[in-house]
Amino acid sequence: MPEGDTVWRACRRLDQALGGQELTRTDFRVPSLATTDLSGRSVLEVVAKGKHLLMRLSAGVTIHSHLRMDGSWHLYRPGEPWRGGADHQVRVVLETAGWLAVGYRLPVLELVATAAEDTVVGHLGPDLLSPDFDRALALANLAAEPERTISEALLDQRNLAGIGNFYRTEVCFLLGLHPWRPVASVDLAAAVDLSRRLMKANLGHAAQVTTGVDRPGQRSYVFERPGKPCRRCRTTILAAPIGEPPRERVSYWCPNCQPEQ
Image (tube, rainbow, N blue to C red; front, side):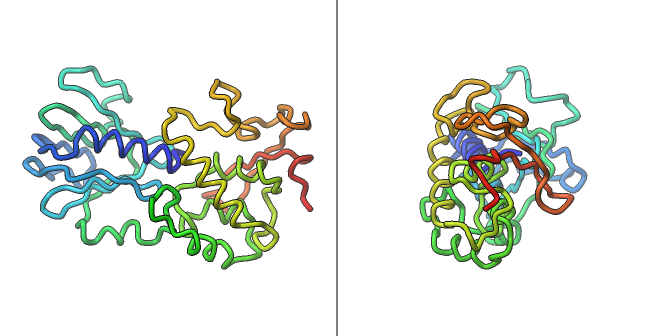
């Protein structure tokens, strides 16, 4: 699933291409919006809120989308071949004089009044990548359920928005935290600060890197490395699901570097 930094980069690209431009054609390919025509409206800005994309248009309308597991936005010049997927996977096409923005496999695509954006993102905790990130509130949110595992607490977007399975897994490794460690026994400030620092460091990268080595197979310490040796101690990396279905995620950890106690 794309994480906050991936969504931030997508919003930045869309904003740079479409911001200030008038929509000359819109083609929504989801039943609830099939007859919607937003041509003539201008794109004011495209911003991220955690893992949510908010495209604000003139006349007080926002296009809200969420990528979830495999959604994506692609930008093309007029006449350029589309390479984001099969035609039946396209959910929306937004056209300006110079660009086409094509949304593929978007599980969430809806229109909301800009003044009512809180109806779709108001449940989110502080955004880790926001310049006005409320660190104190994020820490209070995490601490509110002291018996919860740190893995589940970090992934809960109501606590703090943007962190996903990659960063949660890597942060736990770097801090020596077993994935099932209860929140009450964790230095929450260290976890929040490291999460934010790693995500901000990757804003300029196409890939997510925590090891400092931006090469395939070397970008993470434990994420998606089950059965392989720990980069620090050579102990075999383990993996197991954590969380309640249907939103459970696979956790990866080194049993030596991340002891249960």
